[in-house]
Amino acid sequence: MDNRILIFDTTLRDGEQSPGASMNPAEKLRLAVQLEKLGVDIIEAGFPAASEGDFDAVSKIAKKLERTEIAGLARTSKEDIDRAWGAIQHAAKPRIHIFIATSDIHLEYKLKMSRDEIIQATVDAVRYAKSLTQNVEFSAEDGSRSDRDFLCKVFEAAIGVGATTINLPDTVGYAVPEEFTDLVKYVIAHTPNLNEAVLSVHCHNDLGLATSNTIAALNAGARQAEVTINGIGERAGNTSLEEVIMALHTRPNYFPLSTGIKTDQIYPSSRLVSMITGIMVQPNKAIVGANAFSHEAGIHQDGVLKNPMTYEIMKPETIGLSTNKLVLGKHSGRHALRSRLKEIGYDLSDEELKIVFKKFKELSDKKKHLVDEDLEVIVAESILRTKDIFQLEYLHVTSGTTVLPMASVQLLINGRSVQGAGYGNGPIDAVFENIAKLAGTESELLRFSVSAITGGTDAQGEVTVRLKENGLIALGKGADPDIITASAKAYINGLNRMEYLKAHPAKDSVVL
Ligand code: KIV
Ligand code: ZN
Image 1 (cartoon, rainbow, N blue to C red):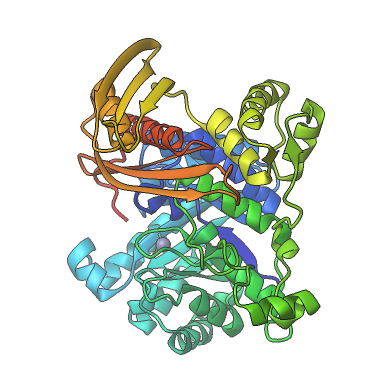
Image 2 (cartoon, rainbow, N blue to C red):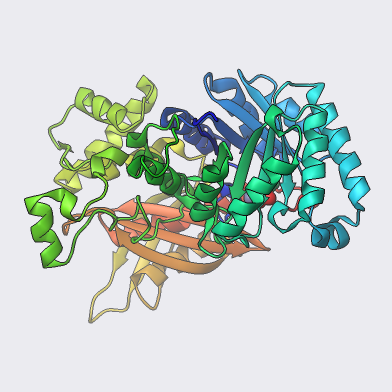
């Protein structure tokens, strides 16, 4: 059996289904470019029938990338398949990904279809997609909870009309590794034409077993893994790309399997995803969490100093985590900035560099040493964002132990300057109250959190806010050495994202 595993990244589709993780087309394109650099084999760029925004982003990605396969998701309807094809047809390597549920519970309560109808819908959809492209993937949603023989029959039917990849999802994260191993082996043994297709798995993390189940399935013979960066996704998320890759990489004797992933692009990809989506990585997250390579206990530190392999099973450099943190300062020029940005994955145009260089100079006036994370924030804030409706022009805050916290704020709203001033329970409350009044927003602030991007008292504070309005959730992110300014930036970013969501609604009928 071929030991090469295909990595199918669905950060832009299933990952984007994390509450609040919506990304605009420019951000999706930037992430897709990074995923290609990371070396994934297939990028699921979106679900084109879901919204105009999704269609637009998928087609932009399809037109831009040259090496990676671009998949567009579709239900079994002709309209969905046409929409997916419309968005990906210009890709160098397009793939239509069709799904329908196969478990009895989904058939009875969600689809209200019989098993025969599911087989017919599968055959019609795959056959139609096959008339558009050679490369068709079929997924049996809730496959892990489906009747095994029926599942194999559906797979056989899909391959019979040309499906080239067959995907077995653990949609609700219910499977456990031994059982999933057994299911994969059963599918291999009881789907007579399976040798004509690649067997894929797609796991969710509801029981914290997504990585284990995925690896178990690869060991049992699956040859494609569907994953997301940082494990983002619906509910508890999807299988983490970085966890699967580093398990294979770190235990090659146990897993004699190879992939095309360039491991030193893992950390830059992780940073980019959290920067763009506003979803922070938990500090103790395997591989990419802030504590993944830090040793607190004295006995560990002592061992690591004597020989890193005493307590480190992986080297930070392997995932692209630079140990040489100090990069640039006030006197660094445009050329040094360009080359460092290129090293960390941002190949900017002259126009973009001009904007970033200006922000870089402003920040280096406030902060002596700028590290990679500072540069990433500048790029995210200055060139990745959509044309903002609300922009912060001016902020002045008075606060302390003997005065009532007061803020005056000036915003640019669609090019028009507006100002306001007022008191609050604290300086951040005063700022938010004023911004909310000026923006006329009805969004409710659900969450506010602050963390430091780097060490030291001049570190940039990174603020994340979570807003809710009419069932829509938007995350906002802002960074600045001054945490009150960072908070204002995050709140304004959240309001801009909310406006984007309101202007690009997903179709009501599309529920995955
Ligand atoms: O979890 C799932 O079943 C899915 C399918 C659309 C593949 O995301
Ligand atoms: Zn999924």
